Image (cartoon, rainbow, N blue to C red):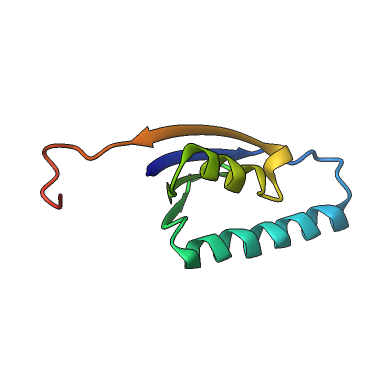
Length: 93
């Protein structure tokens, strides 16, 4: 199942800089492991924002929820999920 996910990160400005650095470092490792596994095949930065558009390829809604809630930055994110379906005009399909 494919999902389009927008993630807007809102880390509090008063968060301890060391804590921030540790969380961001864990986020990078977590997300790159998911990318290498094929579960997170696409990620794009949204210009001028601490946000991204991503595509996830997972088995179920529950798996996506587990992945997203496992993000180290999850507590600091606003997330919007859109399920995707094949378009009948897609020449690749």
